[in-house]
Amino acid sequence: MVLKTFGWSFAVTALGLVAAVLFGGWGAFGVVLILSILEISLSFDNAVVNAGILKKMNAFWQKIFLTVGILIAVFGMRLVFPVVIVAVSASLGPIEAVDLALNNPDRYEELVTDAHPSIAAFGGMFLLMIFLDFIFEDRDIKWLGWLERPLAKLGKVDMLSACIALIVLLGVSLTFAKNAHLHAGHADKAETVLLSGVAGLITYMVVGGLSGFFENRLEESEEREHEAEEEAKKAGKPVSAVAMAGKAAFFMFLYLEVLDASFSFDGVIGAFAITNDIVLMALGLGIGAMYVRSLTVYLVREGTLDDYVYLEHGAHYAIGALAAILLITIQYEINEIITGLIGVVLIGWSFWSSVRRNRALAAAEGKADASDDKAEVSSGV
Image (cartoon, rainbow, N blue to C red; front, side):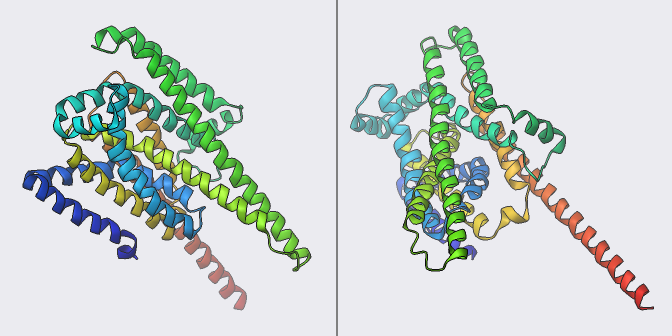
């Protein structure tokens, strides 16, 4: 099962490391290896959240996620996206931007760093909305009950997540504008930060809203189909239900890709702390992205989220932390190690809490069985 799920990741790792050695020797090998580990550590929470969405899809769409999706993730976000950033921010053509990335990496890094405030605002708002919608939803299973119970009650207020997100964005934008004179070249970016954040919020609402709409329609169609089959087996082929399943799966897939894009912002920007060589960056982040994809499918097929019920909670808290970090990095630098460790600690904590919960439930069931056995013996005597 492990080899089947991670086989392509192992193959891409081998090819990527060999390519790194051929491209730049053993030094390049070490850089690519470090970048791969960085991407995996920063994106582990991405895999957990993705698994929660992917488990709703059938095998076909899971395969699409691993094939077409990985092309978008690796080539789109880890290779094309940084070049597009440079092209837009520097008003260059695509060919000029690629030439700059290959032949003038220092200038390339400077332009990507210059575009960071708008990137962080977009990604931070998108991830913040995911986190807020999660913590304001009333769930049967609660991890940090002392915090999640009152938040679930607050979540009954309509549009609360959007209101809080907009307040946060307004605060970040005003603070950025106030302190822009302290940072060279930032004086004209306050408006861009605000617009980028609004764009992130709109993107979340459009993609997430369409995905939820078609998912609800799919569930309604399946219920009607089940009722029709109960009443008469000759009801005919449910063509409309099949079409609706395709739309629902497509928008969930689109939602996953936008989510992955938002998660990859910190990895792409953080990679510049290690290297400004676009080839090594693409190799390292691409290998890491493959493992994130494979880990997502593994979590789905093994039912890990069902066995360890707090994992999804931990991942969403990690999303909230990452959203805060992205918004903070609009003005201040935060070491990528801190970013990665926060996610790992939160997910590790939620995993351990799940293990303790499972042990407690097993112990309670054991005591209950023992009591039943004693009762049977007593009644038999």
